[in-house]
Amino acid sequence: MADQLAEVIPHCLVRAHDRARHGHEGVHTQTLEAYGHGLHAVQYEELAAGLASIGDATPVRLQGRTVMIVGGQVIYPIRYAKKDVPVTAARLRKAVGFRADLIRRHGPEPMQQAFDFGLEELDGPEAHPDLGLLPEDVRLVLVAYACSMERGIMRIEWGSAELRREDRYLIWHHHEPLVHSSNGSQL
Image (cartoon, rainbow, N blue to C red; front, top):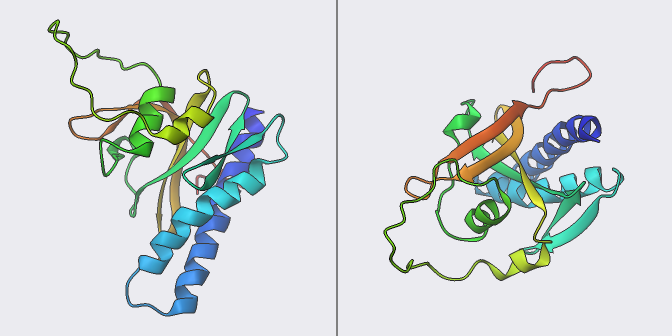
């Protein structure tokens, strides 16, 4: 099943980029706003359509977007950069909210535990309510990619990462590049 996913995911993201670029060209804006918003929306649509026929793929709606659970793992895309930089440079815009909660709840156990001073933790608000739609035992596979309107998809990697709260960087426990299967090269 991993081979099928590794084959399909890059094609889905290339289609998402193409759709977002065409949308931007259609509205003729001077900013990249149409591209960015379009890419955010269509990345989920393309992955849902592409992964629907793989094994026991099950769709679930989270924050108004369809994501797929395949083999007990939720496949979740994150565009981490607009230029070709390593996935180890990936960080979230915010340390709170849906994505942060998803990573904390379904990502790997943190490599370095927080200090326990024996005080009651002053936690922030409850986890995002949509996370209750996911089975507790589902694991998170992040599909992190660098992409720009001009250059297209430059880099795609997948793996598991924890979120470091203080600086919002993703700390990768495991990641590997996804390659384009027709010629064996990375996108």
